[in-house]
Every structure is written in C-alpha cells, then in structure tokens.
Image: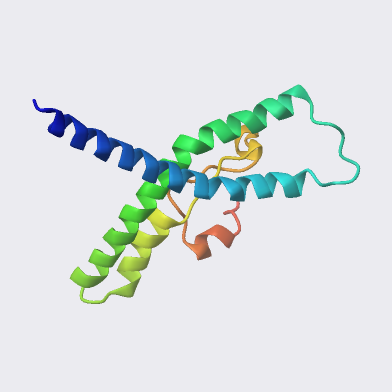
Length: 137
C-alpha cells in the first residue's frame, strides 16, 4: 500500500470526524441553554453532587446520542423526500416518514436520566403528542 492511499484514507476519516463533531456540538448549546434556564430559579439551592453527576452524564450521553439522532434525521429527511416522489406526491406518506425521523429528543437532559421525561428517538406526530392518555380499564 502506498503512502498516498493511507493519506487519502486518513483525510476522509478526519473529514467525517469533523463533520460529526460539528453536528454534535451544534446541538449541545440548546441543552446548555435549557439547563441554564432551569437553574436560574432564585430560591434554588446549590447543586448537590448527584445533580452535578446527572448533568455531566447527560452531556456525555448527548454527544454520541445527538450525533446518531442528527444522522438519523438527515437520512429520514431524504427518505421522506423519496417517499413523496415515489408515492406520486402523497404528502401524508412523506409526513409520516418525516415525523418519525426528524421529531424526537435530540438532547439528553437530567430529567431524561431521572425518568421524568421520555427519551424519544423516534418522533411522534404532533396530534399524538398532545392527545390525553387513554383511560385505564
């Protein structure tokens, strides 16, 4: 194998890593802003060690999860477009693909880790999000 082949493979790997890092870090500020908004309460006590641990864990999990979710959403966007084209312009079919792939959770927060909020990798259409839960029988 020549050095030119190794060098080209290295350049591609670095380019992919840079693109994934850019995508991941473009999603993180939204999570930080949400965390800052929650911590601005005037009578909130200092963070305990468990709270700090949850914040660190949520950030550490957001990095790979956010990259996977963004990649899934991009692929779903293309798939929804192809669905629209190959279904003869059926908007409902395309929206079903887009809702499933583009909607959902992008940033893992401490509330997700505590179980207060669900993590939804696959999105839910808007009418299903706001519908009240079915009564128990």
